[in-house]
Amino acid sequence: MPFPSPRPNGENVRDEQCSDIDELSHRSAHISAIFDGALQFAREALRASESGHLEDVARRHTWIRAVLVDLTVAVRWGTGAPGTHLGAMLWYLIDRMESDTFGREEIICLCEDLAVLSDFWAVLAGEIPTARAVASS
Image: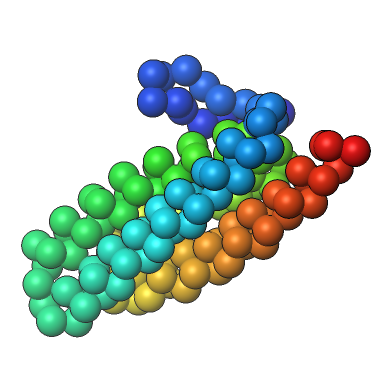
């Protein structure tokens, strides 16, 4: 059974397929931008951690977590099994952020993980034209 993710209205989303390939294609650029934003916040948290600004680290931690929750919903809706798996990996990052420790080492790992998952999304989004061609034939 797929791992459910919440919609903004509180309903749960299961492994739904997007009925409109064009809609999914348009959303892919938006999702890439969200990944970039999460990575930017993580890098800002790292700089704040290295300069000893713990309040800024805490603020970025809150922002990163909120972005990851939104990103999880965005990648899982309509992308089928790959999006479901990517969403589960993002939930893993969210769970890891719940630990009492969010120091330099954890932030570095988060930056690395976000970069890898962003690259995975880019590959997944690159498959959208192929899906469009198959759907139209």
